Structures are given as structure tokens and as C-alpha cells.
Image (cartoon, rainbow over all chains, first blue to last red; front, side, top):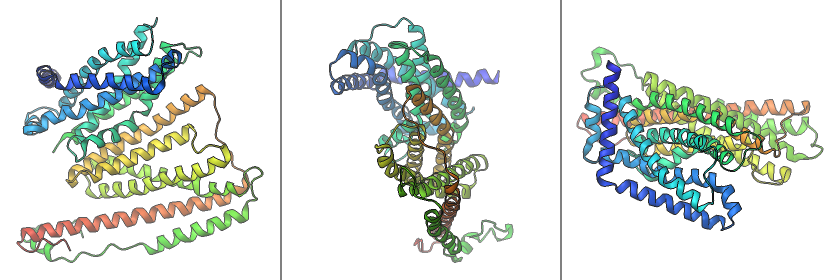
Length: 228
Length: 252
């Protein structure tokens, strides 16, 4: 019963964040535009050779998701800081983890929606056809995004309230994402192009392990991060 | 300096704190001397006990400072993890000061490990950098320390800074083994060069000696930084107490 009430609180925060985003759309449009720009620019840097582009596609896709997605997290707290809304959120009764759960869900949905636009675009620019194992590719995208967004939501809670928030968030977040980037890129690449060694499975397991560890740790440290 | 306040002295605690002189932080000179002495003698021992390596010559001697620096950075890293857990669990102010001291020393030692390894790697492997699991995870550890220190530098409220850096310390500590694993698999799957890791019996004494030297140096750095931070904290408290008592706000 109590747990259902807490989940309701998380849901309320999710709904609030989504409503704010739906009404302004400023954040989504600029992040998607940024993602398209990054995809184009990697193309310029890598050259027009179709084979080279295809083999780089998985890495480029994940870097695009990381570089554009990171722009969204600070903003999710910036909305709260304007007008001291965060203070009021913290004054509401209930557990602090619900705040994290709501913010996490909102950021996850946001990044998934960015991916809905970015991934087909990456497929077109980098000459990657829809893979046979598309279900597994979606699974990798899901796991990688969960790891990325979980840590992004924790670190943005700190970075957004510090001085120099634009620099601090990537500086704190990206070193933490090395395993996600490696595992997600390897798994995606294996599933998109070919997987002669049958490695995709072990990368997916590493990604899942990473997610479990950091989702649990994030729920544990977040109350200490958000208070005061 | 003492954090224990007698209940009966509470009413005029502010005035007492304002007048109380703050002891200057003591430098542990014996520890500094021990670290310096073992470090210098460690190099002498290293040169005397081991022949120039057949392939590397005296270049191999970099190992005597590179490997102990890496070990000492791991000790610093464990202090950070332990202090971070203590901060979040017990909300202990002093654990936060220790956390900062160990992270600073850890960042220096990790940076030193990377630079020394790179200097050794260029003539030995022919490259300044290779995407080996140890190198890459050490680089990531260095970046975690840098982020930790940047966060501390950019956060003003001390209580908030303590909680935040503890969170970053714990998450960073959880990440390092995962980084190591992922880079190791990444490299192994690609089948490229591996790093030489076997050590001949001739090198053991020099290596052990230097390991102690670096451990002493780490202890000296952390102690000095910790005591300085305690001093700065006491000075802040006294300035606060003076301001409350209506006096000068000068921190000294």
C-alpha cells in the first residue's frame, strides 16, 4: 500500500516533467537537432566510404546518443531550480527515491524519444540496413540507455547545482560511462554487421550487470545527493 | 580544535570559540623524512641489486617508481572509498576531509603512474600509449579523481560538498573494476599485444623497498593535507563565531 503511494509520487513527477517538456518542446527539438548535427559531422570526419562508415556506425551512434543526451539532464533540474521548485518538491512528504524514480523515468523516455529519431537517421547516413536480429539490437539500446540515463540523472542532480554545470556534468559522467560505451558499441556492432566470434551475448551480459549495479547504487546515493 | 563541547560551556560557546587560539597544523616531519629517505635509498638499492635488463637495460629501473606509484594510488583509492561510505553513513565531517586529502594524493599518484608508464612504454613497446586494460582503467581512475576534485572545487557549501563527493567516490569506486573488466574483454577479443608482468627475483627487493617509500610518501601527503584542512575548518569556525559575537570577521 505504502509502496503504491510512493510509486504514485514518482508517477506524478514523471507526468509533471513530461508535461513541461510537451508544452515547451524547446529541449527535445534542440537535442534532436544536435544529434543530427553530430551524426553529420562524424560522417564528414570519417569520409564518404560506405564500408568504413558502416563499420564505424555502432560507435558513432552511441557517441551521438551520449553527447546529445547529456544536454538534457542538467535541464531536467534547471527547471526545478528556477523559482525554487526543488525546495518545494523536497518539502513534500514521502521518500526521496521517488523523486529519483520520477526524474529517471522522465529522462529515460526523453532519451528513448531522441533515439527514435536518431537511429533511423544513423541507419541512413551510415548505410546500415535493418538487421536480422533487430529485437536484440533494441534490447542493447534499452540496456545501454538505462545505464547512461541512470548515472546521468544522479550526476546532473549535483552538476546542475554547482558552478560551471555545463563542464562538470560530462567531466563527472563520461569516465563512468566507459564500460557502457564499450559494451554497447561492441554488442551493437556485432549485431549490426557480423559476429563471427559470437561475442554479442557476453557484451549484453556485461551491460546488464553494469545496469543492475548502478541502478541499485544510484537509488542508494541519490537521497544524500538531492537533499539541501 | 577539539570537537567535544562540554554541555555546561554551551551558553558562551561562541565567545569561547572566538577567543580560542587555533594550533597551526603540525607537519609530520618524521614521516616526511622517512618517505624521503626510503625513496632515495630505494633507488640506490634498485640500482645495486639488479643487473641492467637484457632487453631494456637501465630503462627497467622505471619499474621501481612506476609500480609502487600505482600501488600507492590504489591505497589512496581505497581510502577514498572507505571515507566516502563513512561520510554517507555517519555524516562524519572529518571523514570528508580525509576523503579530499586522499583523493588529491590519489590523483597525483595516478597521474604519475600514467606518465612514468608512458615514458617506459615509448622505448619498450614503441608507443606512448596502448589500449591495454591496466592503462585504460588507470586513465579512467585518474579522470574519476579529477572529476571528484573538480566537483569539490566548484561546490561552495561544505556540508553539500561532503555528501556529493562521497556519492561520486562510491560510484567511481564501483566503476573501476567494471572498467577494468570491460577493457580487458575488449582487448582480449581483439587479440593484440599484452603487457609484460612477470618480475625476476633480482627486482623484488628494490620493488618492495620502493613500495614502502611510496606508502610513506602517501601517508605524509594525506596527513599534511588532512591537518591543513582541519586547520582551515577551525579557522572558518572561529571567523563565524567572531562574526556572531559581533567582532572582526577576519579568518586569521
